[in-house]
Image 1 (tube, one colour):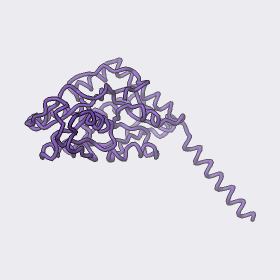
Image 2 (cartoon, helix red, strand yellow):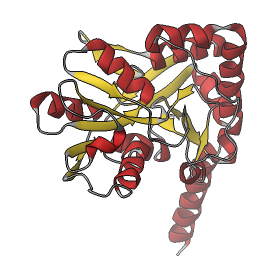
Image 3 (cartoon, rainbow, N blue to C red):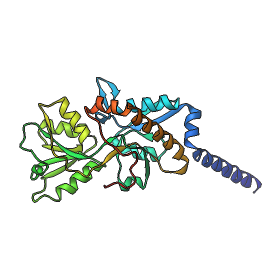
Image 4 (cartoon, helix red, strand yellow):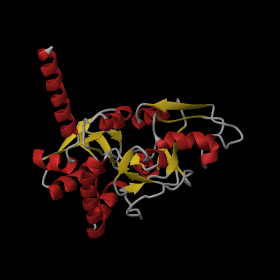
Length: 273
């Protein structure tokens, strides 16, 4: 009996110690380790993608500035988008580069950074097809990326058409949907305007941007954990992002990757989506 009590007490102590470690202030933990772990996918150009075998994009440039200002190294952890947010919740990394569209539902589960780009949804279509307005996707096969706000808005928009699209395909990554446009399997995909502007700029003979954007005005931010012990870390990231906006570094990076800059609020309190 005594051994059982000792074992139970030891187990309880270990459990309490683990809980205390998990509840450690996130900023203190990152600063003590000298490493900020960042989760992302690499199929979301121009934010995060592989070019000639190299990981590149706006996110890398932004987090390079964040790491420099914090005095820590950035450790990248890459996986498919469907695993990124669950990975954050499981504690595999400290923050998500993504980025992700800031929505009311997501704000119930995550603490978002200050916006880093516009995220209004538009249509990327095949360059030689007869899609000139968003409504022209009626009666045609289209697609979007699984688990994204862009796919949700595409479904909502499709429901307003007199003739719905013949199909709305779901893809693990946007790159797969772009490949299906090029192969003629679908005629269009819904994604955020900055992303598709980059894609069309790279291959104008294959893709075109259909304007105007059909989505609700929205913004991209970096998701972090919502628990109180992560507040200091997200506050620090916001402090650096706001400084980058004030001193022109953010505008320089937006111009580099999008060919334009965006007017953005400092914070999103009540998303329209």
